[in-house]
Image (cartoon, rainbow, N blue to C red; front, side):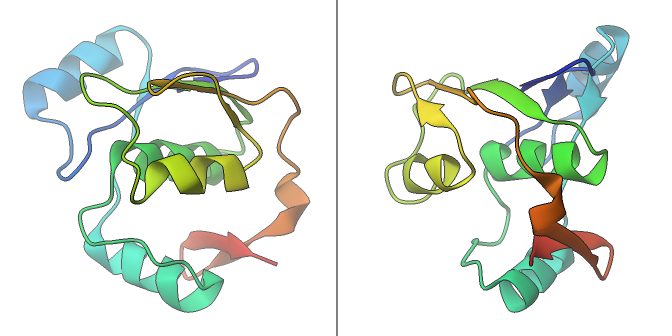
Length: 125
């Protein structure tokens, strides 16, 4: 994910990035995202989300952007497409437009006042 005026954010789906992947991302200046199953449980309980355990990369990088008060600008997934069951439906609810099966773009900044800290995570107001 690229952000407005901030670092890019790298993250894995289904599992967190490997040590080698984290090292490469950090050397590039990226933030590295990870999302524990407990934080996913808290998000589901407090924000009414229905995220599966071992969240997809889209969820982990978005969470990292919110946690660091960074406004998302663009997201690309590779090698797979946005999954139709979760992410292709969820990403547009965050204000992004899906430009293809692999990319999303925020034409307008996200209003962070719609999110509140809840138990170390961010939920909707």
